[in-house]
Image (cartoon, rainbow, N blue to C red; front, side, top):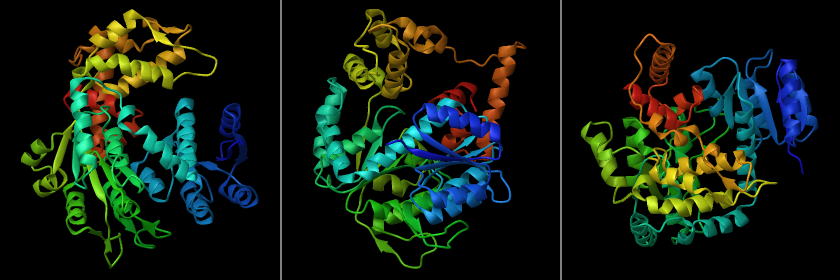
Length: 450
């Protein structure tokens, strides 16, 4: 059955263009040129998603979002705006938007967000079947690796899974920290209970507090109904706190209390709630260094690192690259294509490449190459340019000459620094605003010494 999407924007040309594009993707589309028209259509027909502009009159997009959520709290709403504002984006997420995009957006971006939203909806729609699949997916046999470092990881998971101990997973971005956390959970006695995850670095502090501990109706502007926090949702199971090193000291204090007292207080509540949850935390930072710099609370560090598990970089387990390549080749087979192998020249490049993005970068490279390949074998020309031309990736100094390249890089440096300052150093939000991957942003920050 085709998913039905309601598009809302006062720009008729944009509506017409976007409806044509999305209909080609297989969605049923209805359009509204105002918030009032959208509410009428929403009351008359069933929709799976609403994509709405924010700046409209007399009912703006944020007000429309609140009204839609009051009618159907489960509706997926994607917000779009031409006016980049961190405050507006935060409000949209707080009011229940699934995500937001800044105009002009790329078609691939909105297609990916829609696909991801519906994919998550399908997972939640069939919890029992999903649980069975998850248990199967995260058996040890399905974590790829025969190298000595990975064999040590498997041994540790086997021991950790049998306990209820708090675990800290250390590793660079892309090494598979959430995969390991799920493996611990689905091989434990809690495997029939919820596994709930959150990226602590992706949300502003006020939103993160609401997500973790919940809030009561009316506790802040936009709190139109009470909401359970993830500590409560995960009770009896496992809560995965990804990128815990990105949190503020104030948030760390609240997390510490939840772990010590095994109770939480929702935003705006007067009573506490007891919770029974196993916490697995993860970070790409060296938290011991952060403790010494007084950026991370020492007491929370010791509380979450009862057991520490360090994940190796892909460059430290090169003997696993062949296995991973074959795994991703099977995973990304596309309709009408039969890319079954990779040339020796490609494999040699893979073995030599430094893989700064680790396993995630390898997976993305294979997915891209499968899509671009015109034969049943991936060749060097199908690979991303950074892998083809490895010497260029070694450049790390900013061009300071009067050349065009130097001026562009100077502008990029200033833009990143300015945006970081405006959002209080939240790198995930900066990456989203500037439409960069988090990995690319981290590379730029290091390269420009911001």
